[in-house]
Length: 525
Image (tube, rainbow, N blue to C red):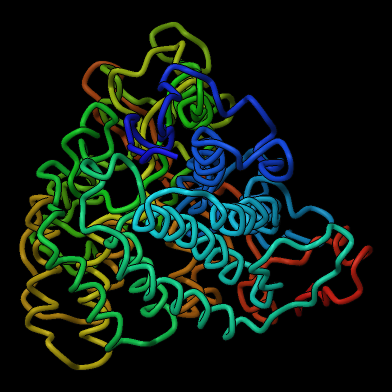
């Protein structure tokens, strides 16, 4: 067999004779890439690898996971985010939106099948190890999500019969497996940024995920080593414009992305705009940003709004951290070339255009990330923005937090944190504190799917995940100037209940327990 070469972009990698225009992913079901039909030619490897990349995470899940937290709310109950956020999740309603997909072992079977079957293929040895390492990363990431959301889960590293009923593996053992895999493959994968690698997993991807898990599990010294190794690779850069970092038209110049989910129109698109655009723009207005995170953004003076005497509650969005306006559409702001009037039932003679009690965001505040100004109606369910799963800014914050918690190299930790603030146009911080680090993670990484994990590891649930979930302050918006006349009170979106006994874990689906007695239910359900 001749040497395999990459000739396509992103997850649609091609080898040998298969072209980028061929819809090879549809040739055979992606979960059946084994047996007599497959693993006979170069194109089989191509199909199997594409099948592995396709579904390693879901872009919609990444941007909507904050709806399980104090950052966001989803009114669409079928996805399951709302139930996790308000505490009504149960073994019968662990839905596809998050728990159902994460719990599934379909992808794990693809990864294990790939790793077993490629061994017999006659290709360049170094290339074979590289391809195996990419898939081992995808498998490690899958187990990372399983462990974070469910705790103990079966650790399956080879294909097994569908009739086999595995037991749950202790979460500590899963963590050890993930870290060991990432350490080994990091020595094989190339040092490349996401642009050069054309969406393939790289050494930076492996070490960045390793640093994330080490931070989450309190291995601060290791987290500092690995996050700094990623930073020092010299192939990643903070994108100069924070807002435009998330625009698809900049993907070819975005050196901040370390690992991302690639999307291609008509082949592997995402429906993020359909669910997250305002109703008048053809969307579902599914997300509802909280008062809590809006209040978290500092003033331009680098102070909390409660500590800055210059903060004016009657003009609350004036002189704030620039990332607030870049990340969130709030009443009176300009979005898609018009005033966002989400507090009012009428706009320009069009009924219910933004109104929170009808087709608008239930909090009258929405996330703007990934929704670039050029989105067309035809793209609402056929969108091609790459969704970043890991980016360089997270590594700076990982190092800063690990430095703070370990009491080591805090000067460098503060320097890294301030790089992010400088990029955003926010004043530098002078002292590295736990409050600062946690606030910076929350605003910098807002609506990127990490807040739930942060709440879990910091055990903030009893204070931030219970009671009323507030949206915008009530008021009316001048449809011409955007000036808001504020009234008394805030929108109450829902009331939430937090259950400490659950320890932030989702329930094992009852359907799984019914067929496998080894799948013991998590506490609190």
